[in-house]
Length: 114
Image (tube, rainbow, N blue to C red; front, side):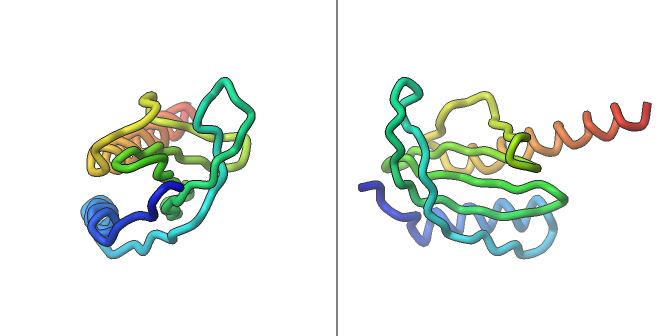
């Protein structure tokens, strides 16, 4: 069984969100199912944090002790990762996830204004 997020991990996430958005954002702790092995159809229950900001939804799943998998999405069929399968550093995971989403949003805005 994968351990839940610790108080320290939640603090790291909240701190990064406050720095990014300039205000407190309260992430929800949720449980999700995901395939940890891309070659298997087996789903594993994982603790995760979820938040929505600026039209995007964010999820960071804890897939092991100090092991995280991030994703952001707009709709079910518009899911994006960071290009890194998993992170061992939660701060790097959160910051990279938000930066990739911000870059994606800027690119989409530039394309729609052309």
